[in-house]
Amino acid sequence: AAGRPAYRRVLLKLSGEALMGDDAYGINQATIERMVREIADVVALGVELAVVIGGGNIFRGVALGAGGMDRATADYMGMLATVMNSLALQDALRQVGVPARVQSALKIEQVVEPYIRPKALRYLEERKVVIFAAGTGNPFFTTDTAAALRGAEIGAEIVLKATKVDGVYSADPALDPDAQRYQTIGFDEAIARNLKVMDATAFALCRDQRLPIKVFSIFKEGALRRVVLGEDEGTLVHV
Ligand code: UDP
Image 1: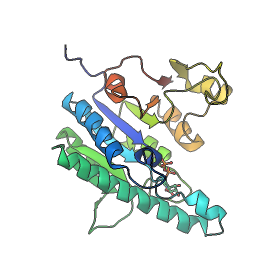
Image 2: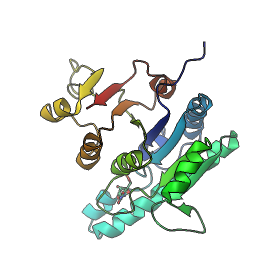
Image 3: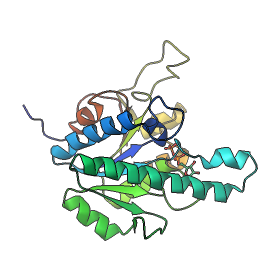
Image 4: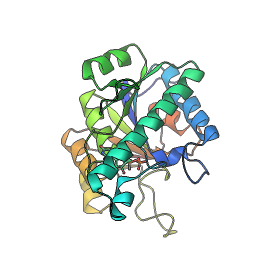
């Protein structure tokens, strides 16, 4: 039986790193094709979907900053990397017949349209996937924060953080065999237990805006669909 989605509008955060698949760098074709299938699946459920994609598979500001480059310059390069990923995702969606639009927080108008909130809202109502590129448009921030910000702006009911781990654990599951996955956890408890869900700025914004976060694995087949259907998958961080 076709399930009913638990949400009307969601903001999906994909890390750039996830796009690499098993490659050392860049965009892995098989990986992006699989992601696009998963996205197409939830779009078919009638959910309004916005996406924020990272850039870590191409470039991270902090890394170059540490190497001596001016941090703000390095961060602008990182933001441009997210534009490349966004275009790749848009085109991969186009190839499977899912309409998508990229909006960029930085103006690069020959390439992508700028972020215009009412236009983004209209695209969502038209069931187009909206991909928010260039993060927040500001150095010293992350695409996690962009996800929280855009999620709040578009009135998403939840931020879906697709990551390498299938939820929030009591300890690092890679280091501690006794680590337990939380099915749900409150924002305050996550802080008290010093659990990393998103970076601090993104986390604080979601908490202030009472915007729940679902952390789940990008590598688990069908996980995004189960999350959207409100099934037990990953960890729900709630108010
Ligand atoms: N970035 C930035 N401001 C933002 C979002 C991103 O300066 O609002 C830069 C920053 O240098 C970051 C890079 O873009 O390292 C890639 O983003 P992020 O590290 O969040 O990507 P992910 O880890 O999700 O792949």
